[in-house]
Image (cartoon, rainbow, N blue to C red; front, top):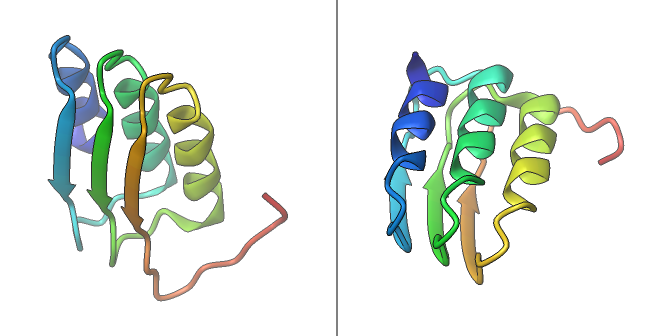
Length: 93
């Protein structure tokens, strides 16, 4: 379940327009971050999102997957991401 499961549950909240999630230090990996993003992309009314993923292990692949998925949030006008990692290696996003 994890972060992907949380995202899937939130995707059922069709009237959700404002969301703040503090998932700091929850051992979320690349797959969890990508899954969370994909699920949130289904929140068609989401316009304001603050997502704190500091201190997780999402890495470059997870950040890329999250960003690609959130790009599909057509009504998203305000996005705040906290992605501080202990080790972050970029492979050309």
